[in-house]
Image (cartoon, rainbow, N blue to C red; front, side):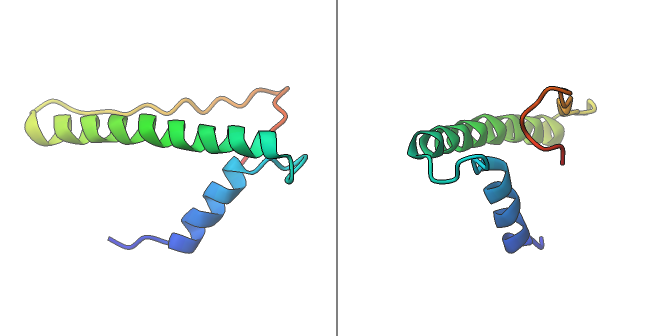
Length: 77
């Protein structure tokens, strides 16, 4: 399987950077907490879905909540 490591790195850096104040250490810490908690949550969901898909005859779905609020301070991408 081919992975675009540079592309993945750029997306992660974009998503977890605090753009209004990049040197704000409090926000840097919060964004690192967000990164780790997202990784722990997402990897478990992906593992459970993969396990279910491989061992059952039922269809397996993962839903993505992708609503972007009009009042969000974060850019839409």
